[in-house]
Length: 311
Image: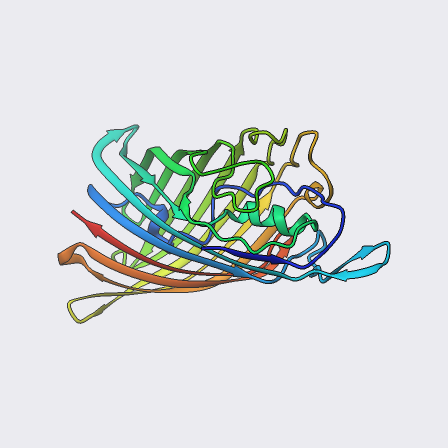
């Protein structure tokens, strides 16, 4: 479900797109291919913001019009439910275990569509929708395992399976393909009860349908620490994490204008709390992240709840 409310009347300026990869979705240890087996997980994700930032990181509260300034009021609430399947085959490629991952997200209009609506300053909308978003398939996921560390490399692709029509405020998909590369490492202490994790994700986007816009390439760093503590029949997971995401190349195309000419970025910090029952193959994790700085995009907060099960 999504609600976008923009109170502004000005010439429309088509904003561009953010990336497919949402940096607040995964938990601290999720970037490393799990042990051999078949897993399923469901991620529930909420993103909320009423704070749109300019290219200097200042809040956009008004815009200049010929008759005088006009207030800008944005209220953004995004929800997604993401069923996923993870598989570690146990096969070896270049000394690494081979696995794969696929996610089929359902939710409201994308954050990119919302940014296009709000930063366009040409609409006053109250829009809600829910449906299939863009499919993600990761056919290559490798893990090199060492005594005190793991290293994972992954390649995946986003397919424009969600509804998209250029200019619609209720777009659920983004209307373009994305190639994603991810390199992650974890260093462990106390027989892997403590983990320090760093993951880098790079997105290369294709041309967006019917817009003559090729969204810029993006780099994301996720980092965190996770501590398992025995409690009752299972383990408590206490974690601290954060992310930084940058658009590293400018959007290209004849329709790139206005707000979207500047490179965007966002930075967040947060914490997670989880509980796992290893004998049952079941785990539940919740987390909260606060975006403390952003440029040329929304600055908000993230709440997630995920459930995982190993068959």
